[in-house]
Image 1 (tube, rainbow over the protein chains, first blue to last red):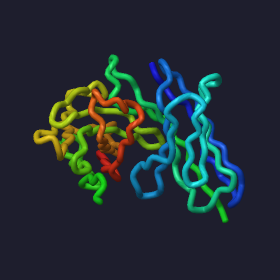
Image 2: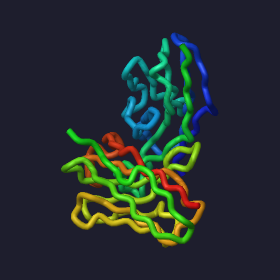
Image 3: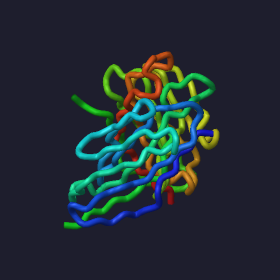
Image 4: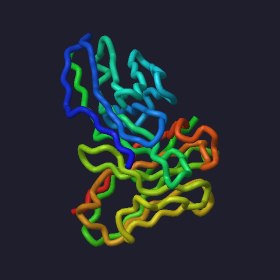
Length: 116
Length: 120
């Protein structure tokens, strides 16, 4: 079945460092791909998305490119801030018997801590 | 506008007790999802509603779990005879999508803050 694999964490960086969080997926066809973020004490929020191969999603300085040849959707940011400290989840919608209404399957999450 | 709200935010139950968790989705959202998030893991799908119809309950782990959305807005997840393995954060999400929507797979789900259930 469809699945998502994220790099193991936690990840600890200094402010202004470069961030990469790896995500690979297994899916039938070419689903949309998402990155969600969970800040401390808050609910999951959509960070960015890509709806087809070669699309690049971007938001708040984060980027991820949908690469079908490597079945990957790695999250990157050129210069992280302390406020980026959160848990990041890669996700894809999981088809349910041909009626895809968007229920999500998530990776296990990557905890990011950014120090001043 | 108001987002998805859930109550209570925290619930402690003794093993064997019944609990009820409430979700208020964004007004007008057709779709409602429940997920279970164990400590250190990503959320796992439990069940899906389109308006008042429960179209998918394939993720409910046992018949002790029951969900309803009788008027197509507020939803309640009920767990009977709670067990320690039920301890988790229960997340509710809503979206505008219906199951015939052409935006299937690309529509955003808006999540509530979750209810953290601890079973002693």
